Length: 423
Image 1 (cartoon, rainbow, N blue to C red):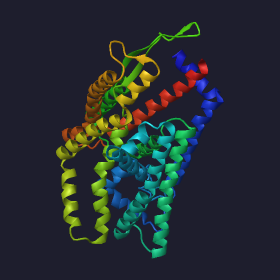
Image 2: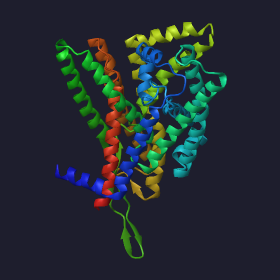
Image 3: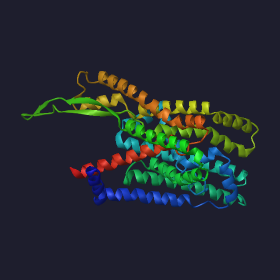
Image 4: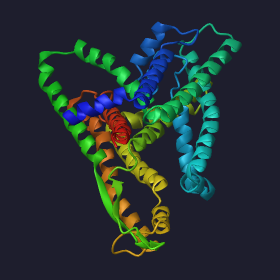
């Protein structure tokens, strides 16, 4: 407890750390203010009725930061940037040049890779903005707008999405933590008061055992997420002794920390984007009166209405994306070469291919456990809904996993900043 209070005091008295924390808080205030500014021509009554009858858009609203429910100028959220990031990550599998840029060219390569993601975000934001507004116009939610005014609305929501992407990157650079994850976190947290308000309005004494069970499950999930997120497998390494100018260097020992969940919360976000993509595209196309769209939309809605198939697809996507993202971000060959270059080696293993093979097999086994855990936690609320008949998607599972993971990442980064000042 004393250590916690001491670190908290350092965090708020040290100007550099305090400024980073205040920058994050300021960015979130700006984000929530933007989410409250609606675009012109919105019928609020029709909008509320539309969201109350459409679970897909209600769920999507959580990850837009609440901006979609208000049809605000940031209604697209960071969705276009996440989609662009997914496309770029997938492209690394097909393009060795992009993979080398992302994993082997250092900070300059990653900066160029991120720049390509930004450039791809713009056309995706235009497509999503135009499609969403066309759909909402066909539903009577947006009315009384000329073609020019409609085009202005498209420009507003696209600019809002790009602005939000920029704010997220500023948070990453000048604040603490990953800016995009923090924005999604803020959107989930902002929806909690309304969610708890609805639970309070529908509360009856007969539901006390059910609510108590949900509370216990929530605490258990939080504990599991903390344990699995912090778990790591240390790989011991030794630095070879070197003699220079009559002095001996090296001979020290250290370790490489391999986390059980290398990918963090990214697979969940990727899987959600992929799950939402078919419905989003078909809902957009339904505004253009294409003859095949209603049938395709009915089939997709029927598939996602079946909790068994929905849960199975979600489980598989989270599982596969965990392996995919880990493979993209952790290259055993690169780690092995870096160890060899610095005169380090894993005891009992030859430097080079043997070390790379060992690290690759170890990461695969760790990722198998981490991917299974992430996938189970992601589909757990679906199982609870099937068992109890009460929807917990808004406050459990995926949302809870993102919130806890982001908070843990923030605490870890703040603790690292404090540790630097304590030395």
